Length: 162
Image 1: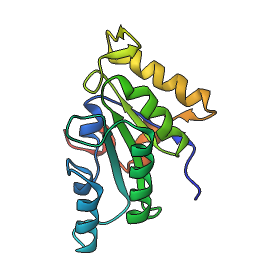
Image 2 (image 1 turned 90 degrees about the vertical axis):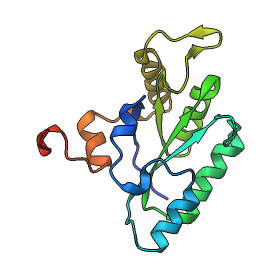
Image 3 (image 1 turned 90 degrees about the horizontal axis):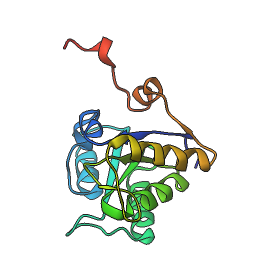
Image 4 (image 1 turned 120 degrees about the vertical axis):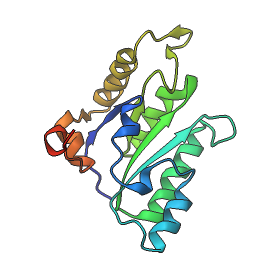
């Protein structure tokens, strides 16, 4: 499958406010989304954000990340954009695996306090810089704000009456 080679870093809460479809809101799993798709209540393309490392949720193991990608592929085919959120110390490892699987990443202090082993991050910018290094180290490029708006089919500030 051909996937876009631009990766978007979604910092912290901003990712929560840039969701473009009701189905990509805070549902607890891709199977719920599939149910609403099957009923015709929501239409693709979708923004699917998988959350890893939350107590009581799916773990941070690489097999967990692969499983969620395979599940989204099976349920939605090519009709979705995939991003991951890795909570806690596994944030960057989960981000790296997402990137190798053609996904996007979300980072920020809301999800993890770490900037490396034993090193607390003081600001979101530290984690965004680490994510950017991962992206570029894999030969990918970070999407600009305009490219991210296009990927997510957002109107942008000029397209809304705020």
